[in-house]
Figure 1 (cartoon, rainbow over the protein chains, first blue to last red):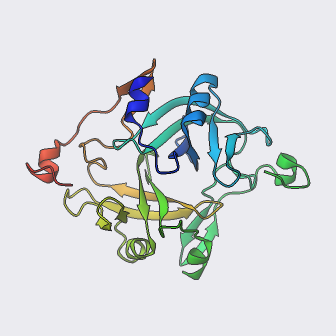
Figure 2: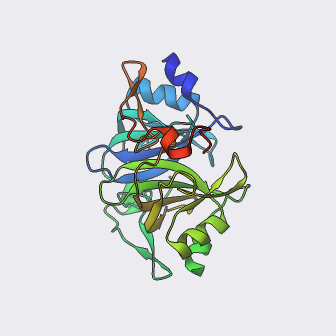
Figure 3: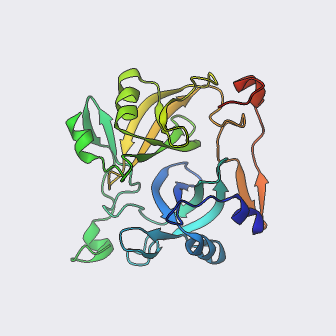
Length: 131
Length: 131
């Protein structure tokens, strides 16, 4: 694992950007952040764990929503300051209940919604919508 | 365009993370950063322009290497703090001469190189290797 840690360049907050991509379809699901601890846990458990900047805590993806990401492969970019997580996403990645967080597209100067809600958020998080 | 600017949440440095994905193959090419000006220019010209954090200047992708990214569609994530650029990449995206910057994968505890150099860097940038 030394090769990995040597390659990574964390930012001033100890974080690195991580893209999650569905391994077989190529769909980009989300962008989030990881620190050393979340990377270590992700590799050890095979279940993706991010660092939540807003909550300043480890964010075990799927812990509340049940929509887990199984790690298939971890890739590192040329500068070592971004990760590409090839994952197998169960259900949906987005807290809005859509498969991908990138469900808005700029079209004709406006933002179009290009994906449907597959699981209502209240089913994912209960009525308090707590993520 | 107001809808786009209203949706975006720039960080304290006025930047937002942008993932470039080849629009037809789904290949994730790179992660870079954009500011308002680079987003505006990208939309106006249809050629992707980033913000180079290391050089603190607009980074017109391909300006020196000739490896341009044509914008096919700009997408915004649920929180408005990440962009997904669907692009048509001419040649290679990575300054190492590989198609994607994510050419290293963690396998058996080591980093394996999983993509070949398609264009030697000296062909992209000349002998001084200036990006």
